[in-house]
Amino acid sequence: ILVDFALGILVYRLARTGVFPLSFPRRAATALAALAVAVCLAAVIMRPFLWPEVPRLLALGLPTSILLLAVVALEQGGVYCDSKLVNFLAKCTFAIYLTHWFVNIVSERLVVESGESALVATILLFVTPVIVTYVSVLVYLYAELPLTRYLSDWFPATGRRPT
Image 1 (cartoon, rainbow, N blue to C red):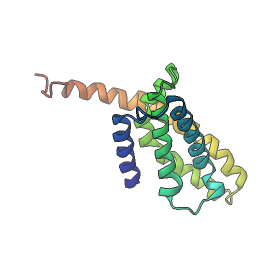
Image 2: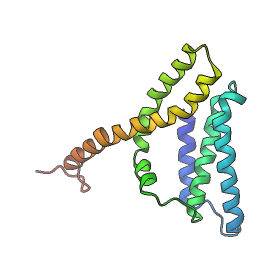
Image 3: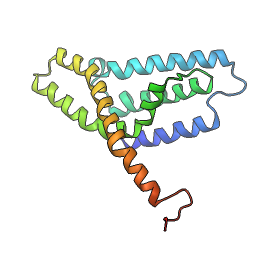
């Protein structure tokens, strides 16, 4: 997981400097980024079925890092979604980061308790992200936002505590 964090920093650095080199044709770069999104998303989704024994870094860390970089590249190339719902969910990403682990533990436990049923695993593969999203929205609305508002009163942008 620490390597995933380092990969995230690398993605940030690459995105900050611009993913698309100026000499690279924009259409080709956009097509390559879209292909990377599709392939990496499929690799992550199919991991439990095709290569469950592959180390986490190779099966999840690298594909999700490439996926993130490709999505950023698409955005830099002018391909993005300007949806209020998507933008709201983007604000919930820290809450997703904090809560997904707990929901995943419950999902994994349900798979184990089901005798590792392929049907249960498949259903949970699609249901778990929905539950993670709902939980993270609740955490964002009822914990993160109020706490952020409260703390911003104590730590304003000037760095001084209000008197």
